[in-house]
Image (cartoon, rainbow, N blue to C red; front, side, top):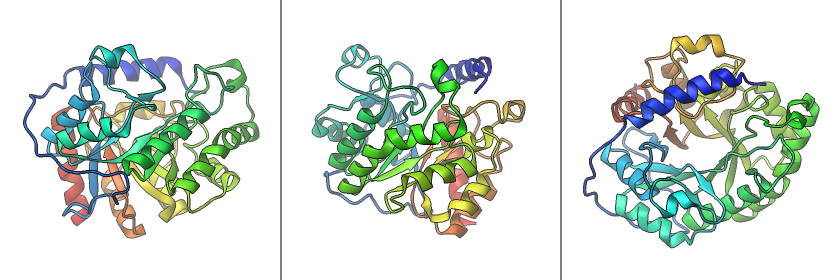
Length: 327
């Protein structure tokens, strides 16, 4: 079970960093994006480098996409999303996409910003009992359907932290069963629609190489179910990201980039995942250059996403990734 105090401390730090991120709106070129399009060609660096769409606080998704483009980033993901409607999106202070939205409304925002979407986040609660108040099986299925209509190949999910006594008391075997049961139908939908359903290290199960392997074996469908390697989360959970690459190889189809500062070392193995990093890649202790080298050697050719607060940190991280990949 993660340390809730540590989690609150980290959220406080990352929120403060995100709150300082404000960039001027600029005009950007538009691009077409149809439902059945194949993802765009790789950048000259040989790696698609995108950014998560939570870079400016209290703004709508259209502004998030434009802010990403203004940093010189060509790719983004759909990060926060919800069922039905939301007051915050109606009144312009929340960056969330409705899972019930018409895809054309999303394409318009993407085209206006001149970027392309490479992933759809469907991070769920897979350890607590199902409830209408929890993001779970139904939401993941809706994310898969909408991703298909938007031409997005990667849908990313994970188990998250349990919030109930029931979830906290699950045995290791029960955790695997809970995840298998809640992901059974999403896997069927992903396979039917040609979507890659990727598990991200972001919980007590997926942060471990061994238990991640158990979940993958339990789910089967090797061509459909894969991994989104989160460099910061896997390290923070107590694992070595290089072990994920060595063990799972080509089943890693997407990467979330985060580096962690030295002061986070005391939280390793106690905190399972964090929303964003507050330092640029290479300034922390995760060992990002070695991870880039190992990914390239493994034949990785998927898209990647920067989960980093602050425009300077994002731009510096993107430049370093290009340099490390081309070295």
